[in-house]
Length: 350
Image (tube, rainbow, N blue to C red; front, side, top):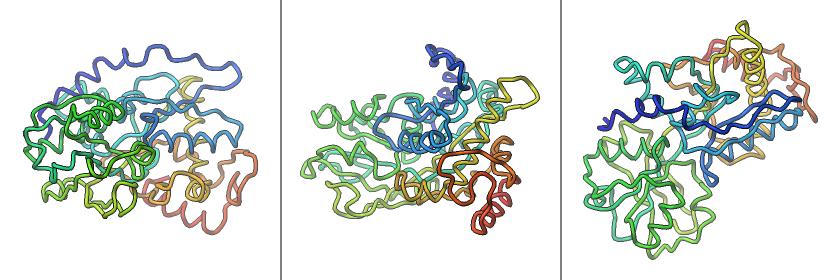
């Protein structure tokens, strides 16, 4: 288990300082935000896909960059007008594990709920060619992502679970990590993102100098989800690679419609987005990021509840008027959608 258990406590106590400078809500439209990740990651592409759905309904869902999973989780809990954040499943598991014994963590997770499970995120470790296995990272300088990111937590857990004593764990982001690896200042870096990720797809990576490391440690394969990055996913990676993965989860908050106008408007925003993700799911799979084809909306992580406002949006009677409504949208339920809704509701209780 992660040795630095003060991570969540420190972040929970200082979260307010992370979110200064939030733009004010428009007088014409209630402000809606989704916290994602860095500009080259899969989170932000998923956020853009969801925002595109809402744009088709005349609504603005603003996609916000962030440090990653931990900031996103705390943002949903703490940040005004931020109804959604994408979070890694191992961050959820970590928070849940320590909440019973740590009041700060218990407060941090209070009221946070699942909207939808998304896709598996593969653990990428880009390393110099002379490093051929996870064990070879011992004594090396390794970048593990910025603090408050999911990559930081996952990389820390992996190194601890595999008992690998690296020479230095650098807490820097993926772009800086990539630059420092190319310059020889570090030996490897972790990056947790759904493959294919833009960081590696859009970069000119010399396959004679760098490669992705396999992750085949039995302990890690039992703790995480075994996964494979297919051959040719990236131009520099010609062979299939065994790795591990975590699940990306779309998180929201349990808004109380009877509390005040802010909660009512936020709940409607959550219902609207949930409705469109469900109704337009085939569109997302056809036109969105390729990872939408791996999404199973019923694959709910254990121990976490679905937000009631999400359930409202999945109701067969929920109507949302959008341009170019597809069959099944705005309350018209096709046989396929009815069957899928029944399957989802059997899992989440809507």
